[in-house]
Image (cartoon, rainbow, N blue to C red; front, side, top):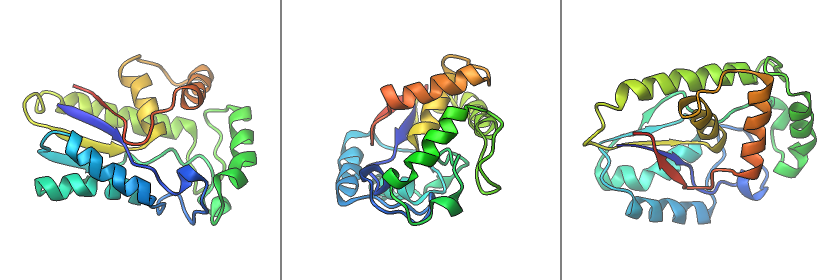
Length: 192
């Protein structure tokens, strides 16, 4: 089976100051959540993580338990704001930038060169969805554990399960779901 798992509680999730999107670490509570998750999940035959620190830290207890080396895939969080602009900020301090981005709701808008447009994010998630579709037949008996991020997994659901096409309407629906029904830390669902 293919398990899709959101990382454990990170420092950004609790409004602590962060230096970069990629290097946000887990809180002590997040580390505990990761250990509890490893107890809940069945044996892993393979582990995928994003390049972001928090997915590696979340996967670590499971990887140690099952003696696996996680493989890095392009499944990192949607980085729609410039990493440079967001350096050493809290969630609250980034809120005006976040609100402005989502008010604009332009799938092709790019905040800066070190940011990603919604259209680029969509393409990245769609590519990974295609890979999962190819892999699902290999993981009917074995278990593939994929540690990713809330926004990535939300868009994956919209693409893989609801077959949503790129549009401004999709962008608005995506934002609504991430606010009204977010995937919680260490929540997981089965792809196949």
